[in-house]
Image 1 (cartoon, rainbow, N blue to C red):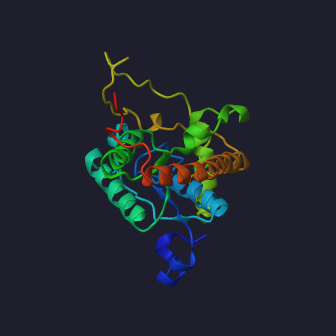
Image 2: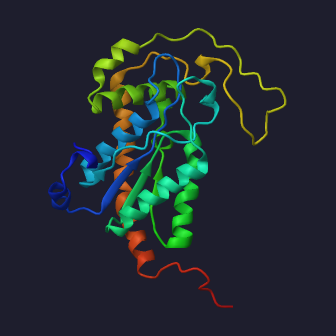
Image 3: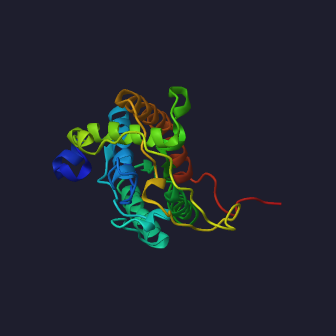
Length: 252
């Protein structure tokens, strides 16, 4: 499936759809067995598989966002949350003005929860524009395959690389299960809502042996969940557009 940037404008007009997926990734360090674009690949592949189910369009992914703890890695490129929010709002606003009414922003990078959800809430609150956030990591249960979260992220990334035509890269970077990691020592931080950075390269997604087929199943499960929610998103967007759920509308 071609991304929106690969289409000509006549092809865009031929795609009579109001469904759009905007993948948002990161460029950040992971374990030595995963590429810097891991989160971007998973968000994009999930969006592609969902779009195949809903006849939607997939935008070129946003590669740069707020990274967080991985700023300890060379090669990680982070931007401030407020800039990420403005980019997300600008893209979604453009899509809305073009008639898209089932707009998804897709990311599996945990720190993106904050800026993306804030951006979408502000669009609703001040512009009456409806779009929704979907995190593929939150929609699957890796435990049923005997996987922990590092195994889930690894398997979904490898499966995503295959979907994106990058499968040949997997064997070049695949690593065996890693040795015990040095502990992440952050004296006094436990229980505090504040930031931190990793202290060892292997602490962010330690290596796991994974089955590519399990990764594809997890990816398909996430895409199916995303596609299944699309009609509800469209219905709500049109409800709001038609004057529903107005602010300051309650009378005593």
